Image (cartoon, rainbow, N blue to C red; front, side):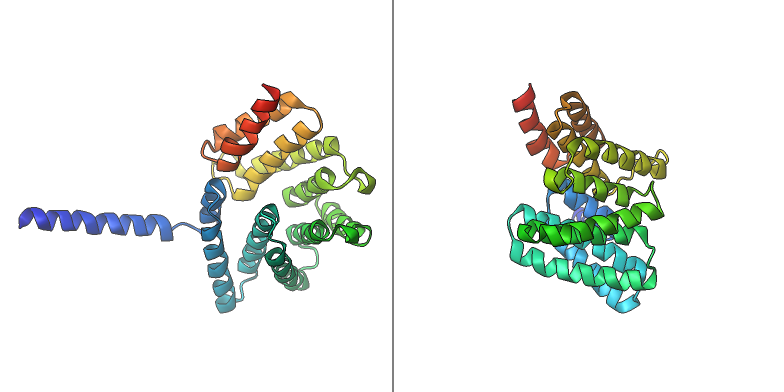
Length: 250
């Protein structure tokens, strides 16, 4: 009887510990874990919670966090060719960005995300590139003009250089330099901390991709290795990007 009570007590304590470990984590920490493991079902859960929190509090910080999470999820949807859901979410995220910019027209991070969201629309409808491309670039350039060291703005400028066709200003070598500046800016804000966010890892991965695309093989190799030192369980790099790179480059 006593042994049963002890076991029940241990079980209750363990359940409480796990509850705190999961639900005590911040939204940023949970999105980071989702990004590491590719668990996009939980990413949706976090977005729903952020949406509910914003509806309750009307906090602009919460709305920004939600919009940034939506931006990340749209990238995933496009990666799995789910353009219907991506198109609907782009519309929601752009609406959120408009609300945020009404509050602060010079919010650099939001401007950068808005420019990226317009670029997503081009990815879904390439024929719109001549019209939407300049709009996206203009908004990102405005963000950079307001803060030339902002990692969000630098990252989206880099993304535009990496993924745009040469005809529309694409240039992987320039992308590499911009990603490096973004990473340097991020690392300054970390100030020695190991608490990365999901998009920090994404910038590092994009640098490796850009380096490989521009023929800078050793930079790509060292970039992949650095990612796996920081986040050895980062599934996308560990199981997909780096093995493909090794197979191709030895």
